Length: 179
Image (cartoon, rainbow, N blue to C red):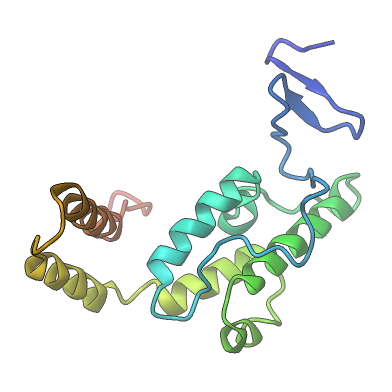
């Protein structure tokens, strides 16, 4: 029987809507296994911005982004969801490590959770946007049509603009009004 929120419970007790999409972050489908590589490009250190964007999209699709940003917090140890949360968190860590080049993955092998891994990756690779911004602005200023069609040229330019826009997001202050 469908509930008022347009969803129903599946056989595992997880919430599904009528289109079959499972909105429970603790749900793992049969296609979710340790060896999954979430994205086509592996993190190599210099491509963090693009890699991070692709990983966020993939994790949102699997309803697992909350494990890396902290919004899906660990249940109390007595909770019936505790073991499943640990299982899912370890799965997300595995997926992230599989989406890195081997040398980087080994450096992060001993993290304790997906949120800790996400924070460490952002601290290490996501903070130095100055040189990346300069590189993008330089690429944009040096881009010319040449023999490209207008559509191809525009696509190249739009990709650079979108990447620059993504990197240039103004940080939102979360501290008290004394900023």
